Length: 141
Image (cartoon, rainbow, N blue to C red; front, side):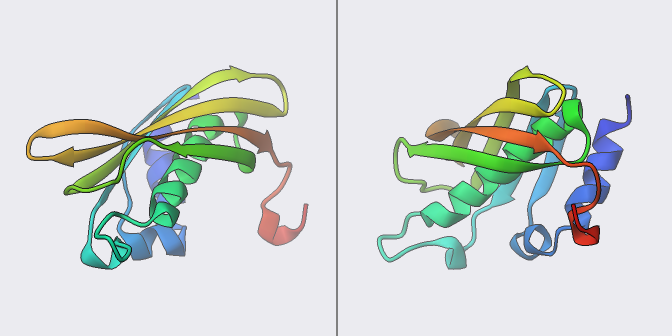
């Protein structure tokens, strides 16, 4: 299957929450996805760091985009995230790779970086299980 990026753009635009946050698809190829999010003031918690929920959202979405390149229609079954350092900067970038996959599931890894002053720093690492769905969940699985 080719045309991953074009299909990924269509999927991203169909996600109201992703549109609300301003998520951008940077790259999508078999087994790999990259999403970015320009950091806004309203993404921050009381200490001035990007809220963990925003970081977690981007990891979850990026894991699923990577999984979709090998499974087709899919959703996240589970994932965990480790926050390595506070997210302070201009842009948050998530890069996911498929570690292994079979007929109905993929295990994916995501590394999240913040871009600040021309540098890229690792801020979180996530791993998740992505599962294939037979139909659009809005139609009932």
